[in-house]
Length: 93
Image 1 (cartoon, rainbow, N blue to C red):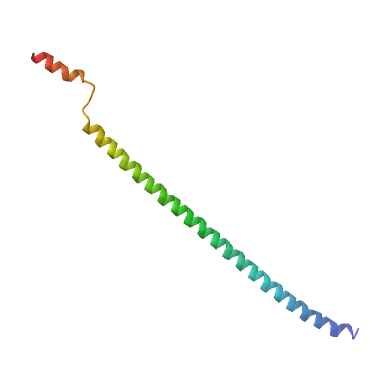
Image 2 (image 1 turned 135 degrees about the vertical axis):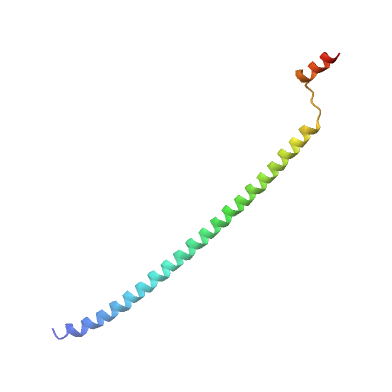
């Protein structure tokens, strides 16, 4: 029994060192994992912002094209004759 008492504290000290090392390893692992997640999140965020900017530019181009088409339609003379416009001409003759 006397020999088991000195061995127990040494084992306890060794387990404490192992436990402390295990805790440090786990902390380092979790920190590394968090950094990786943050980097991935940042990359995805930048990708999303880039896509939104690209969509905004395309919407602006589409809006400009629509405005140009409207202006073009207003500038062209109408090919169809409006029946109401021809009636006053007939009545005045």
